[in-house]
Length: 270
Image (cartoon, rainbow, N blue to C red; front, side):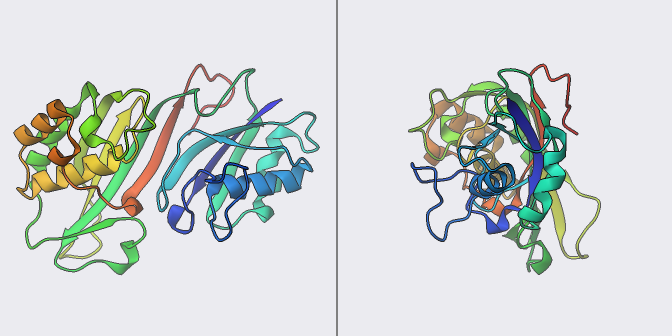
């Protein structure tokens, strides 16, 4: 039986989603979302063979507001729709499984997630806001970035392209072609203080390369601050050279916000 979980987590205390040891065990001192879920599910269902598959390999420090995982289990001792509640006391406060159930035959969280929306938050000013240190990138600048220029550069990246210049590691990518359906930067209405402006990048695509959203975020911020131009961003896209794009933004501002599943009639992400 395939069981599907919907979860959300604060990535600040995790070393990313994926277990990094080949034997499926956590390296000592290394805590991942996948490893934490595996341990809790194995204890709950008395099945040491359980291994969850995730819809995205989020990096250390990256958060998820909506995430899908799946695993195989024959004759679970807890009904699939009650697993989410039964897991709560076995999980840290930074990780919540808020929905669970039997998945359609053949479902795989990785391959049946056909579209994702990420958001990246950053705030700009002369001094950081300490309460945002784990959820937003502080960009120290005496001037605010040009929102028009950032969105002009964002429009260049919309559509289907080879995003070689916006990938941190090409070694594991079978193809660098991805489609971006949405990419924009907005100012959030709520300001943490009068001297600080909070911005949000929203990106929706059929898939993302390693560090792709973080590199796009850094590139758009650099464009807004005049270090790059929209034409320069287009040139980087065409050249495929990482050095032509902007910096890689840090992980803490990145959230997996929404997932879109293939032909899902039983449980729709919310």
